[in-house]
Structure formats: structure tokens, C-alpha cells
Image: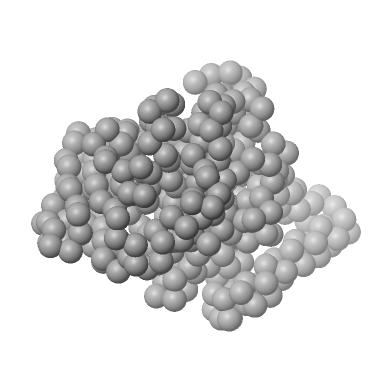
Length: 322
């Protein structure tokens, strides 16, 4: 089994250096790497070239069109039986390809995804953000959890697609705003088998500040409505949870002014919720600092996603504008 690892890149030379350094240590060696520079002004060609004697690696530069179409560019030039997609801000465990290869031999999948986790080298903020994106009390653990709700949809930070699926379905038709979910739904609708490989984790750095995290999650909330516009049946009740939570917190603040006696009950529930997050994060990360920051990151995860979701729900669903 031969893998083609495809990495879209935009103005992140340091990230690709760290990612490629982890690929050098893979225990399974039947793979190539394609780095697609998507119109960057700060390119990484010299960094990629420095790995030429350690990896079967190719560097391409194209005009900026977004990450989905950069991946398509890589698909068209790949030689592998499977195309493996990573975001540039990931670190890959040494046994990743070995794990995927062994799993696919035993349980055939035409497309797969894997979970993400926080690496020990991550900052406290990065670990808190990772917690907020994987916790059962925020995302419901649906991003790479064995007990995910409904059909599992691989996410493009850690995703694989067979050559056969690509040849029939084609590549991404969206370049951003939920492009990975749309693609996996289309793969499934064409009769291909999709699943989670629980042990095929990557260490996903995501964002390095809460401001960047807010912007990213607001975008994710809007992306869910974009998926709905293509596939209405894919909008589930669980996707409304951040919006409901956001409205609940806004209502709680308002109630403190309008009717304080009722606000005491609501305040207690909000405090208990975030205390639950604090103690759960503490048990997971073994760090009081990360546990405290997890309260902030979880608040941002819920409200940023919720506000982005409500913004485009009102605009594109209620008022039916583009």
C-alpha cells in the first residue's frame, strides 16, 4: 500500500518544517509527500527542498485558490493508493502510517478520518483549545470519537481518500467553509465506505491565541450552514447546541438585570457547567493552568461557533440570501 501525503500550505513555513520533521520518523516508508504552496507570499520552498534527501517529496507552487482546490491540485499529481491529507499545523506520530495501513488491510475503508490530540510540547493555550475541540462537554466528542453521533465525517486535518473513490467522485467542490464535510458526504452518497480509525491520531496545534481561535470557530459555525445549503438532511439537533448555549448565556446576563431571583438559578447552572469543564480538563491534562484556560477556550468554542451559526442561519436560511 502506497500513500500520497498531500499538504496545502499558505504562509506557514515554520509549520511545514515541524510537520515534515515528524514524517521523517515514520516507521512505514511506502509514501510520498506533496506540498502545495497556495499562492503564499512567504513560501517554504527552501525548507521543503532541505528534506529532499530524507523524504520522497515534491513541492508545487500555484495561484491562491484556497485549501480545498490546493488538495485537488495534489490529488491530480499523486501516485498513491490512498491520498492522506494533513493540515500544515499538525505533528504526525511515528507509527501513523503503519497504524493506518494495518487497519485498512483488516477493515477496508474508501475514506477515513482520525482524531486529534494535544502534544506535550504544545503551549497551555493550545492544550486548552485542543480540549475545547475534543471534550464531550463542548463538541460532544464528535470530532474523532468512537461513539460519535450519526455518520462519521472525516475532517481535513487528518483524512484519507482511496484513489478509487477520488477517480469516481472527484475532488473538493468547495475550497473552504465546510469543504471536508461536503466531500465526505459526497463520497458516501456514491456508495463508498467511510469510517474512523481511532488510533490514527495526529497532534493538531490549531490556533496559538484565543483571538485566532474565536475567528476560526466563528468560521466553523458559518460552515455548518454552508453544508446545510448543499445537504439539508445533514443539519442535526446537536449542531444547534452552541447556538442554544450562546443564547442561554446571553439570556442569563439579561435575567440578572430583569429578574434577579430567576437569574440566581441560571447563574448556578452556568457556574456548574464550567466547573464541570474545569475538573474534567484537570483530570485529562493534569494541569491547573490548562484547566483554567479550558474554561475560556470552551466559552469561546461555544459562543464563537454559536454566533457564526446564528449569523448565517438568519442570513441564508431565514432570509434565503447568499
